[in-house]
Length: 542
Image 1 (cartoon, rainbow, N blue to C red):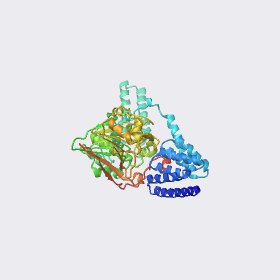
Image 2 (image 1 turned 180 degrees about the horizontal axis):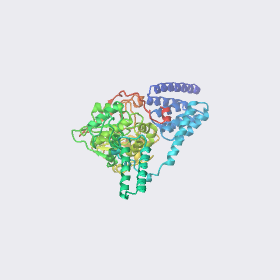
Image 3 (image 1 turned 60 degrees about the horizontal axis):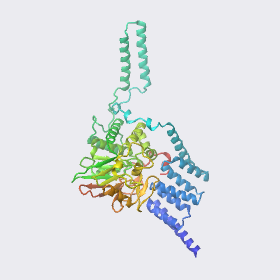
Image 4 (image 1 turned 90 degrees about the vertical axis):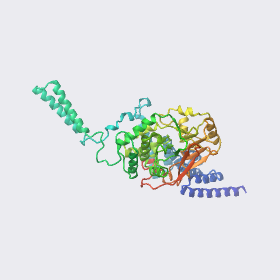
């Protein structure tokens, strides 16, 4: 009888797996996880079920859970190559290249003739070598200089007239030598005259080399900033250019980013926002480089202005392939009217994420290498959280591993750095809510999961009413949890062109500040795939 029941469980488990596979194919990854879980409950000794659930977790960016499931698959069957493959992929997604390398080496040992395994191993080896090289040449933090302070955008304009900077240098030096020889052999010039001759020659060289420097070349047909002020007219023209896949002149891009840095630098780590009675305020979640969906938000809800202010709650960049357009647009509005738009840091406003998920490659392609370093610096100036009307706490990720954290503790965080792997700053950027009370390990492998009781105590301790956070894709673009005390809002519809989710934003009106949630669908965009600028090894897994 027991054998009959066991056979029945195995059969039902296989049926659950097949249903899960179909859900996975339909991009219903959460549903697929539920079905794989049922299969595991019926037959927990099948490595395939664990590895498949690990893959579904990876699709939801739950890399910590993916590593746990893949490790269980390996424990059940140490020769099951997909267990190592799934775990290696999750390690890669977390930037843990050395751990990933070990798993892909094991895949190659188990499947020595698999060309796909060999290709992924080579890419992983390249990533590890690059990481070691960067670590070797990087300067200590105490010795690093500000990139922004080395840039004067006023001097950026026409290129030198000569096609070679060496030729005018050589010509100028030859002219100086000739002048000295004339003085030496003919003897009719004083030292003062000689110095004038040298000055004239060198001055002529510099003028010839950099004539027009600081003036944007007349053939540039895009949006222009006249003087020092970023105007609404300029921002509208820039967005229209971006919509038509035109680029912004580097001089103006520098001007926008540098001015935004100056504005952000003066802000505290926790920013207080006041919405007067009768006025409204909009909170948006992750937009992840989906520029055309950002334009749709503005079409639906109006452009940012002092009468129509927004808070964008982190993860402006990465994944989507129009991240440069997104960040320059948001920064430009910040320059135009600082109180029209507020910007919070997300976990993707960091070097480690930008290196993996596309922003670094996109910036290098559309702007320059120096902009890579400049954005990394400016992202460190972004505030970590906001409080609206002393009642609504807005943060990208979530709450903390300990009770008793006060708003004053968040204000006191020294945020001018890359996000650490633990502590308050890390948890603000990375944590997620969970349905059960208490705290648990993070399904992402960074931060933690926190229950409704944690949310309730934090709100009570700080005399707050509501937590608004982002960080997670939701089918409807939002989700209300913890007895209505926590709302997740996500503003990138059909995330990565495959999730099929809606986007959402939340509109609050003073004085009651009740959340009015608006959902919207994805709009078409040019045929540039998500992750188009990401590292080779990440494109392999997408």
